[in-house]
Length: 343
Ligand code: KG4
Ligand code: ZN
Image (cartoon, rainbow, N blue to C red; front, side, top):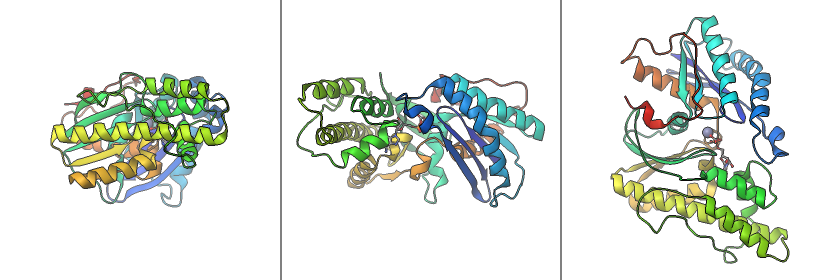
């Protein structure tokens, strides 16, 4: 089975073809960083308009790519939510239009399930059950995944997502958008002993997160400085990154202990953070837990994870309902919980 996957939930236009025999065939991405950078964050209307411009040419190139040689697909999967309504609508309408024209099913996919399944695209991929840490620009969740498609959210953020905290802090420090990679790069020059920020909600039991206080701490710290030179900015960036990495690590290890799972997967844009990857790798090693990551480019938004999730959902849902993917209009869900997918 060959699936075209389309991702347009936020500021990346992604498309890919996954084949159940060959694996990932082709993958392409058009980033909108240039467009949003000068506003310091994603402008939803500009995002939707750029998806309209980029998506069809991207798919045309994908189909004609030498690795695909013009071959057709058996289904079209698209991100139906959660995400920005206008951006989602572009992917959903193009996907259902193509599926109708090609007379194949159109499969609505949950963006976070896409992230959660992204490690399955790697050579060594996890088996069920596992705990998933999903850390993106819009979500911070610990999910207990007992079996394929069975999700229990163990804890999530009460306010800002981890990626959002990186983006807002970067903006405060005068670094560009998206903030995660900018802070990580700047923090490499930082000195560890100069500032220390709290590890929010780690002292109380449970698996909830709260990151909005951290940016206030960063703001207060910057205001106290007589001069905000580049060394001070790097020192603050490092202290912030360490606080987030530490907080996420503490909660991951707690979730593993509470669930008794021996596998952890980490995905979503913040999963590309090297300090986080290293830290979790070493903590998991100590506890005898296997940890799995997608390659860096599949941590952030991409079409490959949606194509794979399309295949996964097709296999799962066709056993339950012959109607899955049938034509009859489409819907997008800007807000949508992973737990709604449980059968
Ligand atoms: O998964 P993603 O591409 O889009 C959403 O679904 O939100 O995640 C984007 C988020 C942004 O907030 C970005 O700042 C963050 O992931 N991010 C990082 C890194 N790369 C991207 N955060 C920390 N370190 C990174 N290296
Ligand atoms: Zn995402």
